[in-house]
Image (cartoon, rainbow, N blue to C red):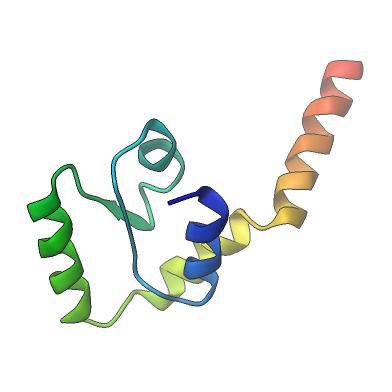
Length: 83
């Protein structure tokens, strides 16, 4: 699952599950569950269906990763490097 799709799902306050990748482990570890095997993925889906999502966590995570926040961080880095 690509990062943009995962972020969109989090904005919609939907539980997010992913197959393992370096990107998902690093960027989304706070708000997405990463399953290393097919059985673990199925078990994670079942677990998420049985409970309410942590909407506050998902909204906070999504707001930190929206395009405005990303652009602000990028601009800050560019300006620091230019100084």
